[in-house]
Length: 111
Length: 113
Image (cartoon, rainbow over all chains, first blue to last red; front, side):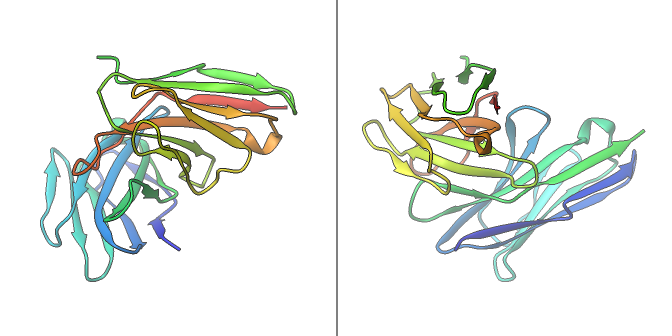
């Protein structure tokens, strides 16, 4: 059975801290890994990763994929209260049109 | 461009009642999806439609039916609602083939008493 596991389930940090969110996966015919941010409404797309070792970066957020060890991390530096959200990781497979989602990490940034 | 729209935003049902959740997208996407989101469980796929005229079961299809009315619209029906179907429902769409990103609607919050 395809599985995506995120850790930690939740964390609380102070503004300015750096956080690392983890996503491990066991899926057949892996194609890509996606990160989404969800702030009380619909998830919004952050990154898509297909190749190992290539960092994707957007402002203070960055992500990298390790296809050998089957995991990805999402880093957020200099966190702000606006980063408070649920961060979702999902994988897509070579065959089929589905995404498999992890349970998410709830991040709360305190001022 | 409205993207993905869902109606209603919020609904309260009694056990045994039926209802249809509506979803429409104006991005000319081929594939559409229905998910439910429960606390601590992420997004679970209920049904999806890879293209107009096709539908397939996802991870948690029991108690639901879907209709891909045309390329734009994909509805989710609860024939006899149960309290276990209390959840937030998201519709999503994406272009087929290489583009992986799914675009999500704003969600429908459903409470079944």
